[in-house]
Length: 201
Image (cartoon, rainbow, N blue to C red; front, top):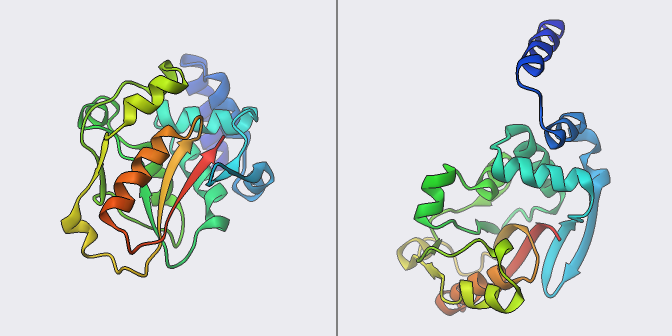
């Protein structure tokens, strides 16, 4: 079976040459993914790895832009040691327009593959479409996401007040997106402990 898969992959690669970052992701193994972890705290955001690491960058790009299930699973392995058993994780939501264009939310896919990770996708939502943050400078990023997020209070009512809420994004740059999401959540959930986590910075 293994030999058959290798032959199929070889034939597939001959017809459709793999991307360089796809090859980097293929070379990674779940039992060694933790070696890429570089935990740090940046402006009150917990960060798990360094975006300048070519392997981490490849994982993020493949997960976000190519819907690469292997990248989703490997990033979930990176996240797993930091999962708090009694917390609820909230992925940074996409706007309805971007969700339709992309077809998925890469952060949701990572959380879905992380064992023992309780996550909710209906508490936090993006109430308006915004330009991609990567195309903007620092000041414009803050303006871009101001009041972009809102909370579904009916969904929030089902979350016990003692349960910590952790907002998760894939990449932390200026932190504007996570800060805007956290501000909306704190206004709607003042009795919850709220924190932010990024897979890379």
